[in-house]
Length: 436
Image (cartoon, rainbow, N blue to C red; front, side):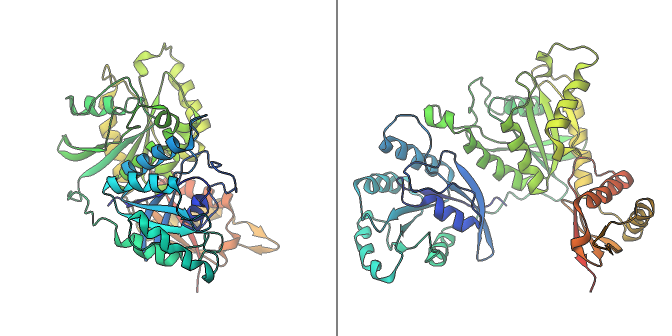
């Protein structure tokens, strides 16, 4: 099931980034008492009342010398496109401004649920100042203080009430769900069409042609799949083209529903920083990952070209050393036949469960070959290991002291598990736990 999306919207310098950081619980978004200081669209995950949601801070999109009013219109429109619920932030110190009214008009027409927050209400005496905000037409305004963390619980109580009751599409457990993510115009839609053998998804050289994630059922050699193509940037225009990061939110929604994620790279353009940021999303989410190099037909090649390109990928994507790499051409369909069997293999590894006794034999052999480390004279002792879940495969390692399990030794154990059982294409997680 895809997580709800909350967007924080408001004019500059009302404290959007401060509220965002409070909700996600860490200082991700830049905070500074200067209008428009947030230069990137920031996204994160929040949780309230055991409900997780994605949240985006729309502050300060960099559009050069355009006036703030036009900037805010664009911000509000992006939030309207992306969000299930919108938090509109205003300032109790400034009262209702003409710009607040402009933002409210745009949001009111959106028909999306809007929860109004009056920030910078730092003491009880200021609460009388919030009544003017009823004029914005969003019902009860919630007085909050981002700097002190006051009132956020009541605000989030109201936000959660408006979350849609979305049920994911009913697919049988044996259906393999996979999605394609990547920068706009790397050929995701072309790959979908090439796999399906029909023009199911719009293809264009203009980045951002795909408007929404599209589910496409597909059967290959008796196995049922669902392909989820993720949207690029929806609209042309300076602000959308300069905020490519907004496409990440759509990718997140598809990743959450996927068993396997195809990270698509453009062979002609090579690897750029945005590719690495996008590739980190399925890794962090614990999904199976395949790196797909598209447009391989457009590259002048010799017998070394593929190996050299693969070395570049391995050097740039060190955190995806477990992910297989497939070189394809959506245009000519060359090597496309290798993709679906690889997806099936990675999906099987993603849900692979290992017997406890066999697993412990592997770990004990690993410890005998490379004894556990010591710290300040105290040695790590490993008692036993057991697999507790799949998708991704997750193991609990019972030890005398979890603090003694150094990252390098944990990586050594992970490699031994991979040597023994494969797990190609899937991250695996090892959780150290003290034996009681």
